[in-house]
Amino acid sequence: MRASPWSRRTPSRRRFGMAVAVLVIALVAATAAWLTPPGSPIEGKPYVIDGDTLRIGSTRIRLGGIDAPELDQTCATSAGAEWSCGIEARDFVEKLVRGDTLSCQRNGRDRYGRALARCTGKGADIAEAIVAAGWATAEFAYLGTELGARNARLGIWEGTFMSPADWRRSHGAESPGFWEWIRGWFQ
Image (cartoon, rainbow, N blue to C red; front, side):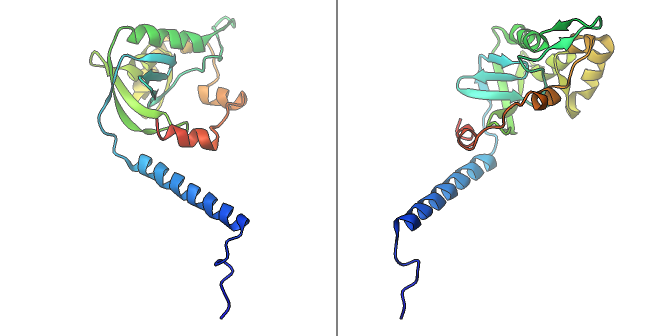
């Protein structure tokens, strides 16, 4: 009876086997993290990263349902003058949450591994306040609020701007690498 070709372990077969084992472990860990229920809220004093991203402790949080200008993004006033709307959006959020303790309920993770969450402070929805002041575009839940800011020509609606998603695409915003993506699941 002849031995199976897989019964003899050559160095290349061992490396292949190890690579498969590491990949399976990473997939199981990522799946477990993805399927883990939201759990307890994230609470604490926030550090503002940009107009729609915060950090509480070591947890990076992306405010769900909104998209604010990127820090390097510029907008144009109604007169055509360029201004740093991404920095202004971040500064608004810093003032909004300064000295406050936030409670954030996780709703999942984004492609960068950040917690997607709805955060409240002093009973108010932080994302809704950002949209109401005109510093972010809205998804479904905040469309009525966005319409009010748009009609009042507040924040980014004062002039013209490229949507944050289009701006990221046109400026080559990088997708996370494999290991960055894996590490994001364990934050």
